[in-house]
Image 1 (cartoon, rainbow, N blue to C red):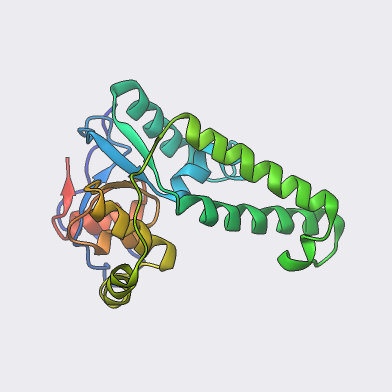
Image 2: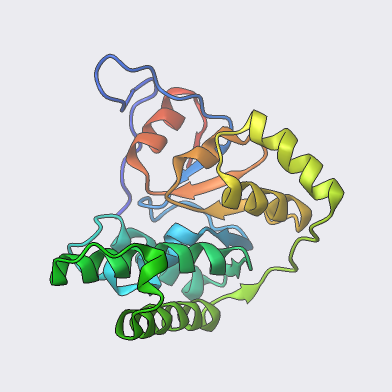
Length: 219
C-alpha cells in the first residue's frame, strides 16, 4: 500500500528547531510506488540492517525491516544493488564495537575494543559476524567499479568535507558514487541529503519530512 506523502511545508523536527537544509532529491522507500533506479549504491547502515543479526533481528531497530523490504523489492524488480569496498572496513568497525559492547554487558567487564582483540572467544565471534555479514552482502549485490585513491581524491575529500555534512567514510562513498555515476544511494543517514547531485533513497523520517519542507521529496 502506498504511503501518503507528508503535506508540503510540513516540518518533522523537534519543536523549536529549524529543519536541516535538503539539497539532494529524496525518495521515501516506504512508498511502494516510487520508481527504482537502474542501479543503487547501498550505504553501510542499510547493509547492516539486512545482514547483521544485532541490527536485523525483529524489534532491535525499527528501520531494519524497511530496508530489508526495499532491498527485496530491488532484487525482485531488477534494480542492481551496488556494494562499495569502503563498506567492509566501516561494517567491520561497527560490528566489532557492537559485539564487544554486547560481551561486556553479559560479563560485567569493561573491555576496550583494542583489548578485546586478545580475547579469543570475543575475537572469534567478531570475525565470524563480519565474514557472515559481508558474504551476505556479496550474495545479493554487484561490486562497484571502485575509486582510485590518489592526491586528487584527497584534495576533493578536503574540499567536500567543508561543503557537506558527511563523515570520512561517507565522503569516500560520495566520491565513488560520482566517479562511477551511481548517484542513487540507499541510506538511513540523513546527512546525504546535503549533497545536491544525489538521489537519496531512505526511510529516515525526519530527513523525509525535511525534504518535503524544502520541496525535494520525489514521488
